[in-house]
Length: 292
Image (cartoon, rainbow, N blue to C red; front, side, top):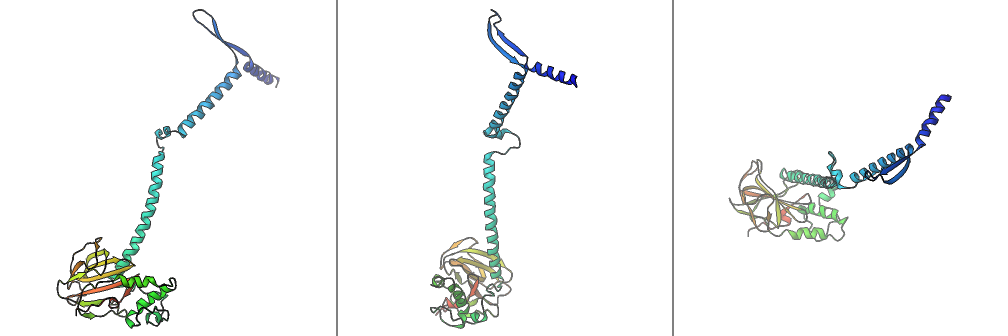
């Protein structure tokens, strides 16, 4: 035990034994500098010097562009672009989902699905007996769907300006001629069939954009226009189309030629549908198709 204490005491004494470091001019042997140091002092200076150098190295790498030279370390610019791309991707996904929903609605229009079926609409609404129907729409059986639509809007919009604007938007009939088949929601015929001669010009009812222009096996050449106020106009059984998807058209502009195409066609005519906010409307409530 005493030997260990003796060794420990000698070790400490060696650390604190002073040494004199002298710097001498080699030619004149003149002393320039004298420094009195100990082993403990040299050890502490070395440790603090290493700590200081390590801190300076860390600060230089962490807070200067030198860190971008380290393999595997992403630059600040790359991280910013990654965050921006993340937001753009999220926006594109949202837009993609909206477009998918819109295309599904268009497909339903093409297949004449019952898009207007709504559990909130009672049988009384569909039969045109809703007492809340606006006074500026005539009480005829054919406009029951429009009155049901307007009455629902009335619960959230007391002035009913939206419905008036929808009616005033439709200005021009797509074609003039006798009606061979009326609008009949009960039979699933959400359109009027206008008898026309072959290649009669079919015109856009109002300013809009072509959202669909393709051939279908059942209804031949079909073109669908999107207008303001949530309005869709559908033209089926055409002989040819003069506009492509994405084209912008003006009211009264020729968009197709009347024909007899598709499995469901029974002669040269135009199958014309009018949809407002996903509800099929009787076009005769908005247009006079008589050529007299």
